[in-house]
Image (cartoon, rainbow, N blue to C red; front, side, top):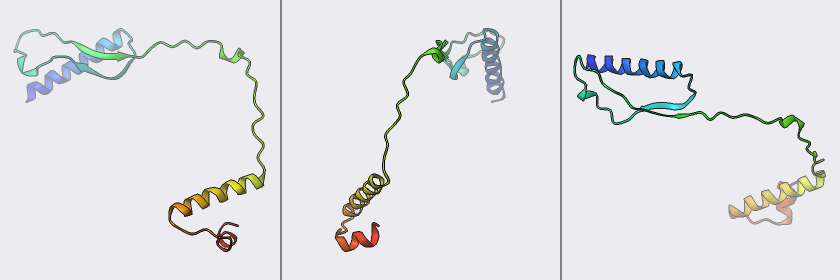
Length: 110
């Protein structure tokens, strides 16, 4: 058990050393491919295959010079907002099986 922890520690250090030396920017955790810790023999070298995803190199264009027409947006009145809220509430109450009538609307949806 101690040997497996030591080998795992050495492998992790070697992976970090390789990635730092090549200045690779990776995504996620590096993965060992087809590696069996039990097949490592004392006083023998062994090879590793490491699989990892590289971060893509992205270069932005001069986006600040792009002209964009800004829309003034939509003008909404308070009356339209109230009507929309009432419609949503009515739908919610109807889904729950409540009967909606004028008396109810005056009391709850004002």
